[in-house]
Figure (spheres, helix red, strand yellow):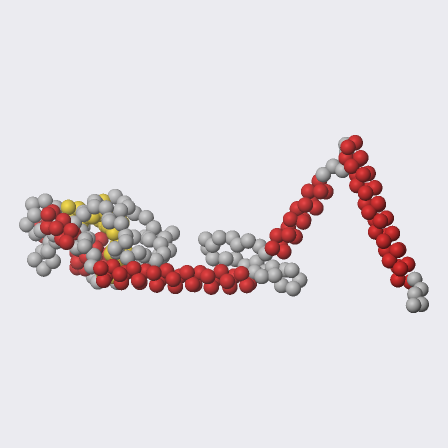
Length: 281
């Protein structure tokens, strides 16, 4: 009977939804405990290398005093930890855009968070999900003390002052990366412009640009041809000589064109006669 009770006490606490409850204590002699809700992260729609399938553990209800380093130390008992990610709420992983320096990022909000713990081995996820509920995870020990309260605020205040040399180094590094990305973007735009340039017959090779890239304007000749086509199409749709004033205007224009052509022909004939005139001296 005693053996069955001991076996029952060593079982993990599984709740609806496939989540496992882990007991968390700040110190070993703390009278109260906290509960972490964990589950294997399986979101196939999320194609991210930062959260690989079968090796990522989804953690809920993380208290404010648990930082990334603290979580890494806590879950390292189940196996080697590759990375730890803390977020304010569940969602897709962060984009691959260049990250700013820690000196220019906004301060993180204090409060309960969710986390993604990536292990190096898939067996570590199973071990964490099957951990007995009556064996609490200890946050603060003599080997790894965790600051809280006034000590934490003092530590944050003393480390809030940035040395000028480190700040200058971070600014230079960011500007170098920015200039490099700018040059790569200009080279890409120049290469696409050359590919889309008109050939001798006026054809333009249209290629698909990068995702999210802005559409580039056509050449001047292509724009002129487009405008001419639009104007011809518009003229075809107009009703000609429908009203009496349109008919009169058309006649006037026709007479003016005939007069102009008559004057041009007279000048051509006079020029031809002058060229054929005999000049003996």
